[in-house]
Length: 282
Image (cartoon, rainbow, N blue to C red; front, side):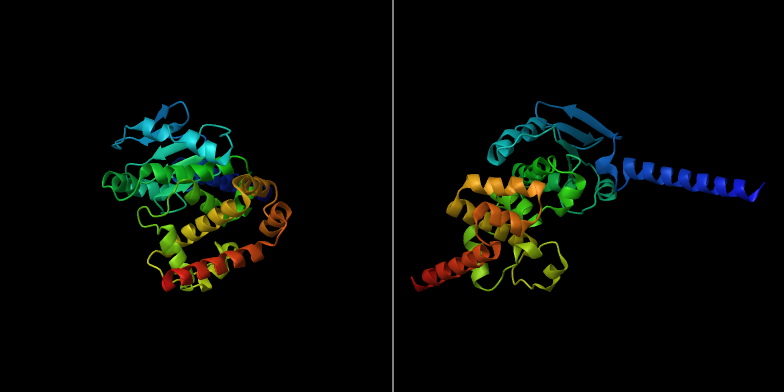
């Protein structure tokens, strides 16, 4: 066999190995959220959603999830481009193998939402509300359906989480602090600059709160609440949608609100602190 043929065979072998690896990852690995085929799950297509249930999973109340879609669309004033796919898992190992995140729920730009078995269990036990959490994730899915994968990666994450928590009234439920508790924590010096979220700078911020991630999400929801109360929901949704086309938070914010984002955040913090001082004096 000539050297040239050996090289060709080696390249072909490498390609075949890569194809096998990718195929395995698509069907039962980290690429599962983007797989063209769902294996090992029973499909249920409803009016608004497509729900896949891992074989053996104890869940049949599909209408409970399907009826959440109109509320998500109404708040965002946007329609789902295609039916979101909600995938319910029976076993933890299968979920962890197929999800990039170990969180209870995981939304992807592919239009899929993965639901862990412990999320279903905690809902049955009354620890969390499946409706609230699924609506939260559907907020992500709805916005990401209008983005490419690259745009979804660059989109300001504080906006994604803030609008999801605010639109579902998630504050004060489960282990999420309510507005009063969030304001108190901010006045005590706990605050994350929204633009530092999901960046290296976030690691340098020390928060003296019980559930740091829940606090961050609620802080962002309070900022959304402030923007809507001060400037109106219509302007806020314009801001949200323009970020799909241009993910530059500061530039788009200035264009929509005609004021620097940093100044609004500073004013928000000052008002929260002043409000808490007034409460203490009573």
